Length: 119
Ligand SMILES: [Zn+2]
Image 1 (cartoon, rainbow, N blue to C red):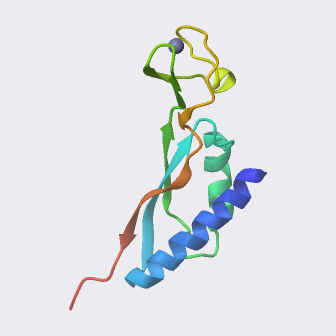
Image 2: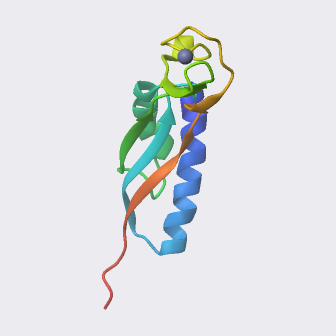
């Protein structure tokens, strides 16, 4: 369960952000996850309740924004979205490329916090 370890780091980061903001609860955590990041969205969602249990993040919804992997193909002079299994080959002309532009992201995209009403 490599996803649980990833989420534990996310929960720690969001907890610090919530404390800094004086938030009483976290409503939603959105992650940006590349298709080549090695993290499986279904596994992330499945591990979320366990990773967030007992923290201010517990009960928050987890939203995953998938980032399709893309490479730059010099032969086509174009950016090409690629399937994770054929990441280093242009899907249009078949030219191998090592220039991965996107797809390894694993980061917090945004967080929706509940803060006490002023007054
Ligand atoms: Zn190409």
